[in-house]
Image 1 (cartoon, helix red, strand yellow):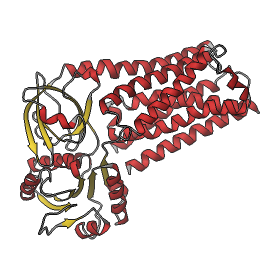
Image 2 (cartoon, rainbow over the protein chains, first blue to last red; image 1 turned 135 degrees about the vertical axis):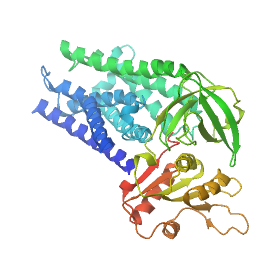
Image 3 (tube, rainbow over the protein chains, first blue to last red; image 1 turned 90 degrees about the vertical axis):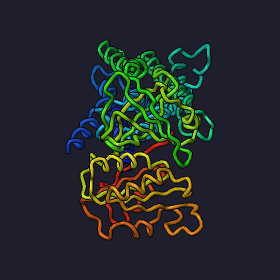
Amino acid sequence: MRILLAKLLALLIGMLILALAVLFSLEQNL
Amino acid sequence: MYYIFWGLLWVGVYLALILAPLVVLLVSPVPAGSGFWWDVSLALGFAGTAMMGTLFFQTARFRRASAPFGIDIIYYFHRQISLVAFTFILAHPLLLLTVEPSLWGFFRPAVAPWHLWAGAGSLLALCLLLVSSLYRKPLHINYDRWRVGHAVLATLSLGFAIAHIEGVGHYVDAPWKKMLWGLISLSWLLLLAYVRLIKPALLLRRPFRVTEVIAERGDAWTLQLAPEGHAGFSFQPGQFAWLTVWDSPFALKEHPFSFASSAEHPGALRFTIKALGDFTSRIKDVTVGQQVYVDGPYGSFSTDRQTADSYVFIAGGIGIVPIMGILRTLADRADRRPLLLIYAYHTWERLTFREELETLRVQLDLNLVFVLKEPPKGWQGEVGLISAELLARHLPQQHSDRQEYFICGPVAMIQFSEKLLNSLGVPLSKIHSELFDLV
């Protein structure tokens, strides 16, 4: 359970940061 | 509820720490955009560096912050999130060099500015960190040397990354942004000073003395320790601590081991250690009277944290140690709740704690199931590996919500046993595990 949650949290944080990086770039360049 | 509240709070703090640099980017004055991929690359570089900085927080072993999760899973998370951070940091130059191939021309000693070399140095150190951590055993890197190398490479990688960001100056050129980045960087460096200097100094003032060295079955040795000149500390059964045996706490030569002794006797700590590697093979040479240092307690693998009407334990090999600590504690407390222990080992002869488990069977309401890979002649018990059929034979037919399951052993065994239990109807929230041997 904890292993799964740790993997999931790492994945979610990765996706969140990727999404924010894309949003930041769109904001800068549109 | 207490641990859930604090767990969510610390996850929130962690998110705030890694998102802070992106917020710095977004607050004005923001320079004009440099193209979509170029700015994605910059954001990933900043975020990756912030994630790298917070990696130090994860291994600083703050007891309060690690308590809701168990520090073993924080180390596991450290490993997972560092792969994410590495991907972002690697994506940063790759994206830049892809959208602007002319940048390759800068990679010449006479042309490249110093901050470009700092960035390349950071990435190189990070690559070495990753390879040495993921493949330490296949590469035959000694654990103690790996730890020192890991600390040095991590510091170099982060130091170079900060220098790279400050050197480029883009997005952090406003004075307050420069100061904020400086503060963020300083917090990482202060943390490093705490972990490497202050914490070892505190440990040095609270030594323990070896009072007994006991040979156990299965090439394992038990060290009994008593606090020297201080009151020691209390712990929950099933937790673990980092032991420094032959060196000063400053030497970074500490190893994690579970408490094998009863939590009811914190003045006589016991650690049972199997001879498996360079360090553990020397445990038998420890002498009575020797001074050692104990950093603990850590971990969430404890029956004290999971109130239940009955417990099921599954142990693989030396994974029996924390479970033994739990059983000894329950015996000291005259606990009469029903317990089931499924203990997998290679041979009957080498089965660690065999005799004492038989004694505990009488003292406690303990049902013992030994699973042997190589059983002796005439063995009537279970044989082979833990399987769904084996569990179904011994577990209660109906899972009760008031029953908790504890598994300790190699990661593969834990994951396999969790799947098996879950397939038999045990909710994942009722299964608790202790990871070790992560690197």
